[in-house]
Length: 356
Image (spheres, rainbow, N blue to C red):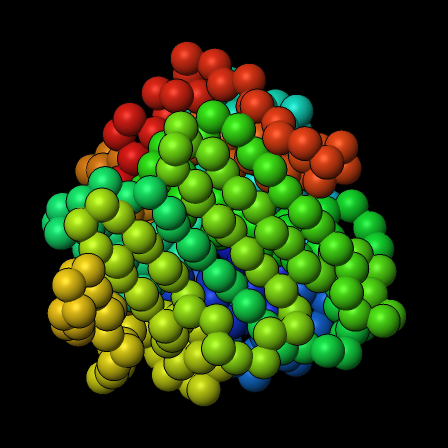
């Protein structure tokens, strides 16, 4: 592999423009050389030196491309990833990994067959809010966690003309934000025993679920995952209750807002979160502690090291498959109105024994 790992980005919509391009270009050792897009002017306005390709196949067959990053609509993830792997490229797939578990397992098999690194972009593992809550849990000061809540809420009362909000395979809020919520929960607690869920379309012109409430059952522990498009404010990002105390993180990690405001990864204030984690000790005592710096570049730094043989894949296909299993279990649970028990294999359970 060349001194710099040459990267092709497939798609320059919200995810490609807002997250992938800035994060890739902010990591030494990665070189974003090509973007596949129908709008070359849009790409060159931000990235004047990259080559814009019209078709993904051009990136797959290009001899200088080492890594393909897929940030296109969800229903294209699996076929594009399969084609890139078959062409001998390493691949990053934006979440969700695929449309279903069958597709996900097939992709993992293709990566194994060609001895390529296949990874899923779970950048929210490196958010300040999640890092702070994880640190608080790991410290033991909360005792055994019995109740955990994770909210990613928006206030977008009007349905926009975006594929994520239109009817179709892999659209809707659960496929959009559910993978982040589930992945973070599995990092903290491993695989649940059962999944309960309710999904709804609450906006008048909605075509696909824009409200999701999912409960993961771990014995007596309950993990609540919630997302909505009609929350104007007031919901905390995280709530944790344990046998020794509670913790609340009110505001989300600032990196997405910073990227939208033009702040580049690594600049002053990057990832700084002024919203403290609030601890309640159960005896009326309240304390506040700053959370760690968020830095989603750490995903791509770890991926770079994995490609160079100097580290591990930060998000493995096996982990992404179990996330897909929870996503599917929630959809089934919502449809039948009862809890669903995912059929975890030994390999599924092993996927989280060495999770970062």
